[in-house]
Image (tube, rainbow, N blue to C red; front, top):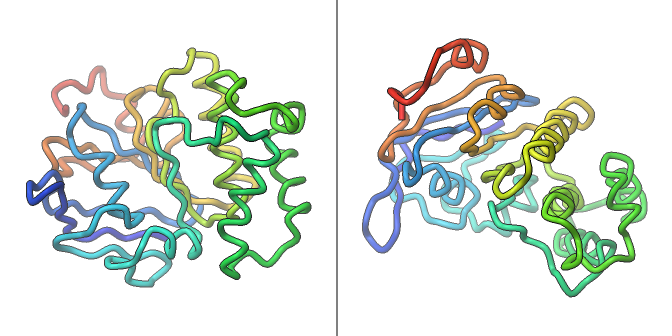
Length: 236
C-alpha cells in the first residue's frame, strides 16, 4: 500500500529525516515510535505531501507520489490526521462531515452518495450521530478526535496517516480511539501508519513497528516481539 524509500526531508534547508525507509501493507497497522523530535511527524507530513521529499521516493498503491501535492494525495485515498483537533469548531458535527466530503467529492473522486457515506460513519462512530447537530467546539476532547477520524472517513480513504491519536486524552479514551482504528482496519480494510508516544497502546493494536531516533529508522520489528521487551528506552 505504501513504500517509503530513502526519504530525506526537513525544514528551511535543515534536514530532520535522513534516509528513512518503511512500508505498510494493505490492511496493516504500522506504528512509528521514538523520542520527541525524532522526525516522526516530519515523516508523515512528507509522505502525504505537506513537505517536499528532498531525496528518496514515496509510492502509494504502486504510484510515485514523491512530488505530488497533499490535496491530490487525499483524492488518491491517502488521508492525514494531525495531532491537533482538526475540526471546524463553529460548525456542527454534521456540517464538519459534509465539508470534509465536499472537499473530495467536488474534485470528482468520491462517487457514492454523501448520505450513504455519512450513514456508514455514524454506524462506526455512533457518538457523532448523537452529537450531529452540536457545534464541534462544544465537544469533549475525545469526541473531537472521533470527529476528526469521521472527517477523514468522509473522504473514503484507503490509508490513514495518524499523528499522536492519544494526545491529550484520558486513558480510557485512548483505548477507545485505538480500538476504533483497529476496527476500521477490520471492517473497511484500511491501512494505518500511526505515530504514537504511548508505546503500550500503539503496540497493542499494531502489526509491525518502526523505531525512529534522531531522524533515522533504527529498528523494524513485529509489534508482538517489541512488546515482549522489558523496556524500550535503549531504543529511543
